[in-house]
Image (tube, rainbow, N blue to C red; front, side, top):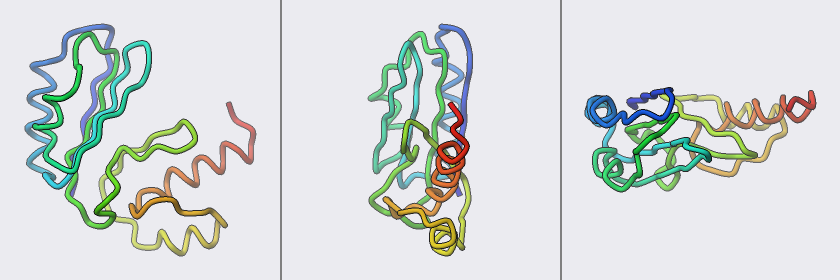
Length: 133
């Protein structure tokens, strides 16, 4: 399974905390990785390698938010998390075995191989159907 972590704060250098969390996340999944940061704008980093290596490629100074995942691939070998669609992003740990059936029932078009996509797609459909901003 995957290792997911996050830190929310106000413009602090989280490097020692991030290092610890990245090490824990790496133990849970080394196949792919993703990091989402916020400092005046959102930035997403994705890779098909371990999160320890990805972390070294990210600007992690003075952030207000960081969310990361070390992923053990169960399906979707070409798609990495975080999954992004319609201005929303998702990090998910687990396997959804009925995602294809849910896409059919909800009449939603699938755009990736990752089964986690169904969570994001249903949330976006709900937001659109209920005109939530």
